Image 1: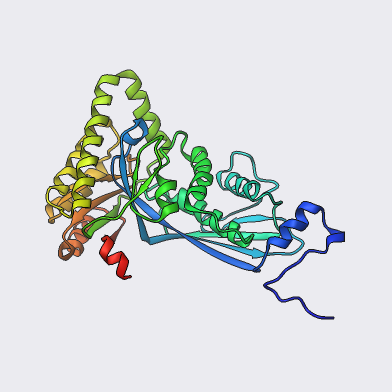
Image 2: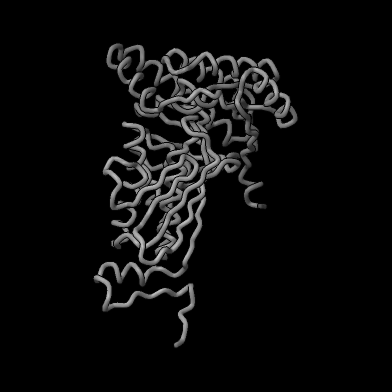
Length: 345
């Protein structure tokens, strides 16, 4: 009997329901792997929820990886060995974010769950403002859709991942799923199409993990409560943040870093006034500035998590070391390249 090549797997039509048979016909590889980067918000967090712009950047030094492996005769399973969890899609509750994203992806592709195991690993720290949830969900959508022989465009990947973000974070801005799905710097403003863009000048950031777990849902809800109690003050904060973001965007796209550090410092002052900073973050930010950073601020929802410092490339290691001495659990040095550099690589 002639063997079937492993990269061309067909169901036996007389043994399978029609929908499941169609699912099998879509499978071309017995194993597929996909990746997604982490992210940092350069400027604009929290205000972005209230209509102001924000700029986010992918961080490829930290990634989520999803692998889908065919497991004939077994139910579709999601395995999360990093946190010691695993569950079948059929048994997962409706409120489980990754299960929801997987179900929506399968519904988008109009197929039944395949007999496969989807395993996710990530080097992105959880609850640190680096988009760990959106990254693992993005890797999941990419791996599952590719396993079923479909290449979804970034906009569709982003929309699917956003549904998981809603379960994780309550009322997310949508910026995490957007920048991670597109894998490029993104100008994001609510109720407007995301605008991936290129910087006209490269720059270097040091990202420092405070070691304090920040809960995005709590931070976002806290800002909303305070805004509802004092809309005039908080609307003023949001507008001021929007002005900072627009000026940073203008400078990055025109090719100058002059003044960008001071603008990041101003963004941090406004975030602290909103009540989302943390003593551990303030300590790291102060250490970074003292070591020569051009500017520094928290990144993400706050109340813990990460902060970032804009640095001259030659000062990056010294700033990172100073932030570690000040208590950072770890630091990442990442470089954002210009359009010209991206074109050559």
